[in-house]
Length: 448
Ligand code: TRP
Image 1 (cartoon, rainbow, N blue to C red):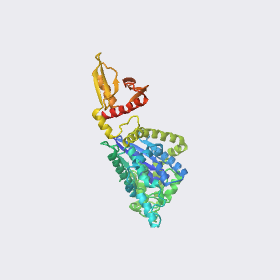
Image 2 (cartoon, helix red, strand yellow):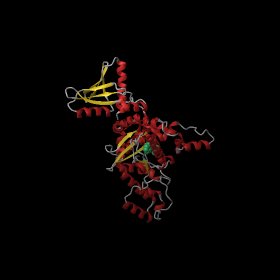
Image 3 (cartoon, rainbow, N blue to C red):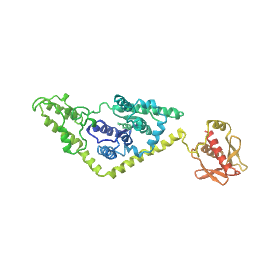
Image 4 (cartoon, helix red, strand yellow):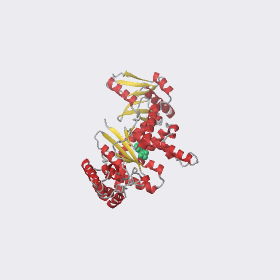
C-alpha cells in the first residue's frame, strides 16, 4: 500500500539552515520512496493568520517555493502546491467548522497561550485574538483530511493540531459516514533522528532568536554567519571538546561519518576555531553551492515558478474536487435534480410499493414498466430482444446517479448511452409532468 505523506510550510519567513536540516531535506528524501505519495504545500492561508504584510507574504511564498525545488523536490512524483490555489480547502474548512466543538478549539495551545498572556497582563482574555488564530486547527484539519493523508511530519508544537484533525475527521465520519469512512485519520510523525540544529548562539536555530544561518544567502553571507558562531576561548593548539561545541553539532548534521571522525580528532588535537569555521564553511558550501545557484535562477524566473505551482494545484484538485463533491452530498448539499429522496419516510413508503414490472409484448419482445407508489405508470421501456437486456437496463436506471432525463412536451424520455430506453406517458400539463418526474426520482432512489 502506498503511504500518503502530507505537510505544509507556513509562508512567513525565509528558510534557514535549521529548516533545511530539520524539515526540507528529510521531506524530500521521504518523497523519493517508491511506496510513498507525498503532498507538500505552501500554507499561505495560515500565513495570513500571523502576518498582515502583503509584501512579506508574497516574498516568502516565492522563496519557499524556490527553496523546495532547488533542494531537489521532484514535482512529477510529489504533489507540490499553494494552499490558496485549492478553493476546496476553505470550503472543506467550513464543513469541518460545523462539526468542530468549540470546547476542542478552546484547548488549542496557540490560542490558550494568547489567552494566558492576556490574563497575565490584566487584559480581556481574547484581546488581539482573531477568528483566524482561533480556527487555525480547523483549517489545518482541512489541509490534511482533504487528501486523506496517513502521515503528517511536523514539529512537536504541531502534534496537537494533527490530533485535532483526527478528532474532527472522526466526528464527521460518525455523523455523515453511514458506514463509510470518508476521512482517513492521520498520524503525526516526529522524526527523532532528524537534526535539530543549534543556532549561532547554541540555542535552537530559530528566526525568533535571530541566530540563524541563511540557507541560500551568498557565499559571503554564509561565511559571515559562520564567523559569528559562538565558541569557547580556547587558543589554537589547545584541545577542544567536540561534545560541548555547537559548531561541531552543526558540522555533524552535514558530514559523512569519515569526515566527522576526522574533524573530531583534529579538534581534540587543538585545531584553531578559525580553522574549524573555515572547514564548516567548506562543508556547507559543498552541500549547498549547487542548490544555491539553482535557487537564484528560480527566483529570477517567477513566472516559471507560477507555472509549476499551478500544475501542482491542478494535480491536487483532481483529487480535491470530486472528493469535496462527495462530502457536499454527504452533508445534504445536493442537486435538486438527482436527489429528491424527500424525507426518510417517503423513501420507506415508496420502497414498499414503487416497482419495476417486466412483461412480454405481443410480438414476443421484452419490456418493463416503472410504477410509482400508487401504482401509476411513470415509465414504459422500449422493447428489447431478450429479457436479460431489459433487466440490465432497468438495473442501470436504478443505480445510475446521473439520470439522463429529457423533457419532450408534456412527457419525458430516459436515455442511456445516447439512446432512448424508456418514455413516460403524456401528462395533462407541464406541472403534472414535473410532479411525475419528482415521483420518478423518489421511486428510483427507493429501489437501491
Ligand atoms: N501549522 C503548520 C506549522 O506551522 C503548517 C501547516 C499548515 C501544516 N497546514 C498543515 C503542517 C497541514 C502539516 C499539515 O508548522
